[in-house]
Image 1 (cartoon, rainbow, N blue to C red):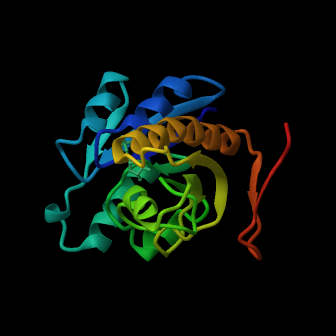
Image 2: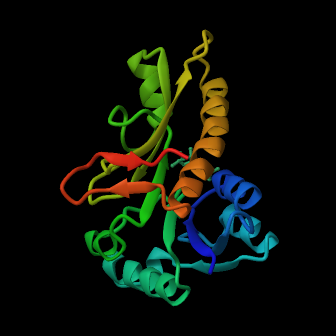
Length: 204
Ligand code: GRF
C-alpha cells in the first residue's frame, strides 16, 4: 500500500510541483490529494495536471475556521492520507485540526527557525542583516512555525542583498529539502518522541 501524501497550498505551488516531480508514483509514495483555500491557486492546476484529486475549502463557505478545518480533515481522512504537507498554505490551522493529525503535518518555512517565524521571513532576515538564512521543514504544532524541526539547510545571503536573488536561492533549496523530508518520513526514518521536541532521523 502506497504512502499517501496530501498537500495544502494557497499559491503558485512550486513546492507542490517539486513533490509531484520528485516523489509522486515513486518509492511507494503517492500524492493522493491537494487542497486549497483559494480556487484560483495555481497549485490546483498543477495537481489536476498530474491527475491528482483536488478540493477547495474557501473561508467564506464555512461559519468559522473550526468548521472549515473539520471539513478539510474529514475530506483528508476519507482519502486515507498518511501525511499532510503544508506548502505555502496561508491559513492558520485550528488547534483541533493539529491535534487530530498530530505529528502527521509538516510545513516548509523560508528561514532557519526559530529565527524569523511568521510571514515575510525572507524580508525579515534581510532587514535583520543576517549573512546566512535558510530553509526549515518542521512538524506543525499549535504555534506559528514553532513545531519540532525535521530538516534545515543554510542559504547564504548574496552580497547584493537583493530580495529576488535571495528568494530564488531559498526556493531552490525548498524544492530539494521538502521532498527529502517527505521521503524520509515515508520511509519510516523520522521519529518524534512524545516527551521531547527533538526529531531523530535513522541513518540509511
Ligand atoms: C514558500 O516560500 C514556502 O516556504 C512558504 O510559502 C512559499 C510557497 O511557495 N511557506 P510555492 O507556492 O510552493 O511556490
